[in-house]
Length: 101
Image (cartoon, rainbow, N blue to C red; front, top):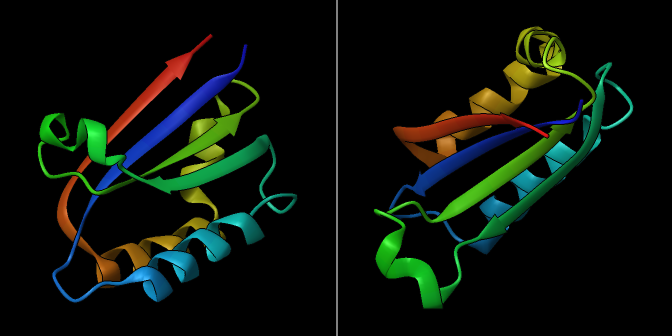
């Protein structure tokens, strides 16, 4: 059963395309390194739906093999590195959702 781990972020005022690219690239380096992690995507909110985003500028979707992989992903040292970048680039206010299909 595939799980989609979705994270929404609000950019700090001084964050630009270079920082967003750095975050996305770091996330992509985790592929093949964390058991159960199948894919990762990162992108900015579209202008058309920005009025409905409640200020969340960017989002990430991590695809995992099964629900138990969420804990493996969250406890992995590479995830800790990603969280350091998150703290540097994004506001504390974030939204996490996990869906299984």
